[in-house]
Amino acid sequence: MTIKTSLSIRAQENLQGSNIMLEGVIKANANKFDLEANPNGMVNLGVAENQLMTEELRTIMRTVDTADPKLFGYGESPSGSKHLRELFADNIFNRYFNPQTLVRAEDIVLAAGCSAIVDMFTFCVCDPNDGILITTPFYGGFITDITAKSKGKVVPVHLGDMSPFDMGHIQLMQNALEKAKLEGTTIRALVLSNPHNPLGRNYSSEVLIEFLKFANKNKIHVLYDEIYALSVFDHALTGKAKEEQCVSHPFISVLSIPNLEQYCDLELIHVAYGMSKDFCLNGFRCGVLLSPWNKELVEAMRSISVFTWMASTTEAMVIKLLSDPKAIDTFTKTNQQRLAESYTYAVDLLREHKISYIPAQAGHFLWIDLRTYIPSSFVSAASAGDRAAEYLLWRNMLDEGVYVNLGEAFSESKVGFFRLSFSVPLPQLKIGMERMIKACQKTVSFVPV
Ligand SMILES: Cc1ncc(COP(=O)(O)O)c(C=O)c1O
Image (cartoon, rainbow, N blue to C red; front, top):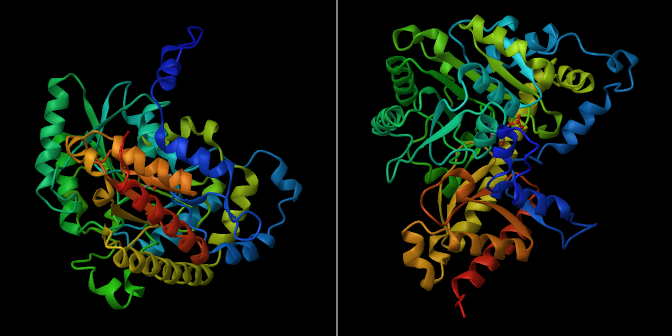
């Protein structure tokens, strides 16, 4: 690409390289699948969007008068009205996250999406080129959130064959932090998602505590992204899907750990949340930062929130949804039940086709291993880290009419892993997975000319 020299250096930086995840999303959105209107369209099993609660949401949202003139003006505050922040505090955090200290509206900053929250957090804790540690694989959007505007640097921690859910990997984080320091990068924070995206599992309290101790020892912030907190569904599984769960931990919010101050300076502990996942409202753009013990960070985030002010109509609709605790209970229980049903369908089909996966207990997706479909002539290069086979699989899937997200988008170091989102209506999931399997079968027999 020719660099446009009239642009700032930071803008030019954003034009370099390619965003493979975005490429897939654009393709999927250009020709959306619809069972009746566009059955040959692209089935999107790549984006973490939950389409299982659409009817319930339509019923609730229809009752909001979005043409109310009160919503035509600026809202009460760029970082969220007091009323909505109170609803998040009382009806989400205090009700479901079991915090040891009650969450208050003043601990909360709202913005147009959790992505905006991560960007603002980066802006406030990092100077340009300061680093944020994240273990791989991780939610690919963090790269844009951290780098594009606030110019932080993602320092990925590759775990090899170690699991991010085992204690052992904390030492690898320490090594990465020290290596970064030697190379001139100051690490300012650790970011993690719990439940984990893309692995769909919860951390144990022991590992969550190790993160706190690590952050405290190195005097860095730790942001727990808990955006999938209410999308834990393993209690609703039965049969084989239940049996293969092995050791499962319930979702434990960092806020619920007793005596947090024993492990970490409280000022360093923060939580991110949003409406995109547990409430299936990706398009609403509503994200939350909760920082109960760092008033300075909350104020600093507020000072830049005018750029990410939620629309008044969105605020009104979120207020409607979060105002009735009983309705939230019913909504989340139904959602979890449906996630369990779709998950079961997906893993049954994967097992039938002998595709390995990491059993998930939360979230909208499964981490699947398609290495057995790498054509023989690509195997040794793929083992050495060459992505050609992963792209081949991915492009064949796109040609078959299904978008599944590839491991590279999650900074996975091993070639051949994919993230499959199952939170779509079953007929769509069935068609999408059949297309994916067909593409895999086509790929494995590929012989380069
Ligand atoms: C872990 C995690 N954090 C943040 C986001 C972004 O959320 P939002 O749509 O609120 O920007 C996502 C979306 O996939 C996610 O998976």
